[in-house]
Image (cartoon, rainbow, N blue to C red; front, side, top):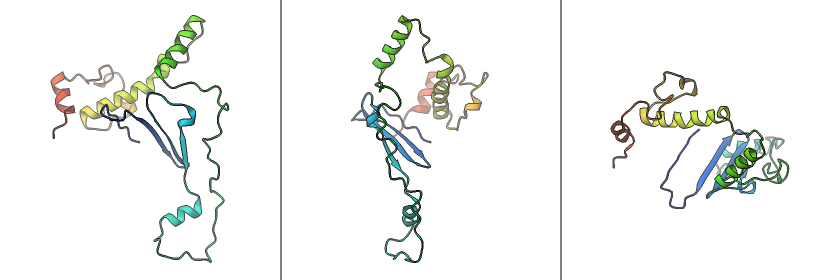
Length: 168
């Protein structure tokens, strides 16, 4: 996987793209998205996939059987409205409204310290990798690791600036 983050996008567009064996799931949005903003592009079926690697100038062998049994004919991401419950906006206001509503009604909130840990580990690993130039695995982020409790990994500000500054 890849993570690319920039504060310099002139269109201020955020993109999430997940490539899987069955296809690509993607959303492009500005400050929030709805379920309908997602697109899914299925991988081609067996016949189409075989043809992708061929020289387009060659004529296909008519004796070769065509197996289209795994072709995806339905866009699996469309037509899901209501199937997963009411659509909830994906912005900070919606998140805060849910939190305040849960607190006001004495309900436990679905976001807990434990549920945020994988996100914090991802962010920490991105920072650690950027500062060290090395891959950082989730299993590495344990007590005693320089980045476990400090996103600078114990480095001074000058060292961080020096490692993250682009030089043209």
